[in-house]
Length: 116
Length: 118
Image (cartoon, rainbow over all chains, first blue to last red; front, side):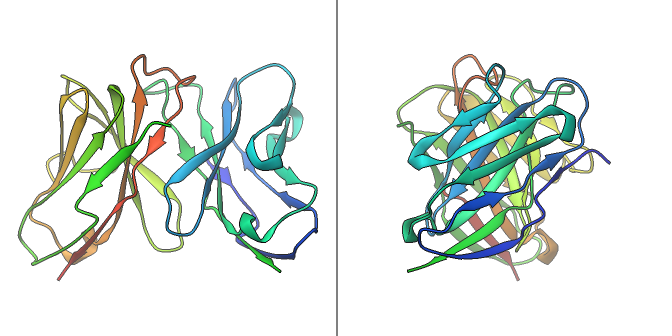
C-alpha cells in the first residue's frame, strides 16, 4: 500500500547534537512534501515544505530537509538541537492523485526528546 | 498567523448518543477543511475533505453516515459522530486552508477534540 514511513519513532538527543529524522514515501509521480511539528500542548504547525526547485529546503527554527527523488526520501535535519526542539515531528505527503488537490497523508510521527 | 479553533476540546458521552464537533477558522475564510482522526501513538488519518457548500469527500473505509460533515460557511465545519460507540473514542483534528484550496495554501490545524465514549 502507498504510504509515508517514519522509521524513528522515538529519538533522544543531548543539546547541541545533530538531528536527522527519516521520511520515506511510496507514491510515484510528482509529490509535494511537508514536515510538521507539534510542540507539547500545541497545534500542529508547518516547519517546511517542498514543491519544486532546489531539493534542499530551509524552514523555520534552523530546520532543513532534503528531497532525494531516487530514494523517495525527505529527511529532516538540524545541525544543533536545543531543548526547545522537544516535540513530535510529522512528515506528510501530498499525493499526486485522487480527491482534493491539497490532501495530506501523514507519517506516524517521531517523538524527539532533547536533554539539557 | 491564521488560527483554527475546535469546540469542544474534550467530550465524554454515552454509547449510542451523537456528538458534534465544531471547527472554526477565526481570522480567515476556509474554502476547504479537513477532518483527521488520531489514535494513541499513531499518525493522523485523514477522514474526509470538506468544501464549503458541497458534500464532503470521505476517505476509503470512513462511514459517511456515521461521521456527518457539514461545511455550511467559509468559517465553520462540523463533524457529527452519530450513535457513538467506544471504538469511536479518539482524538479528532481539523485543518483549514485559505481561499483557493490548492496545495500551495498552508493547512492550519486546530487543537483537536478528544472524544471518549463510555
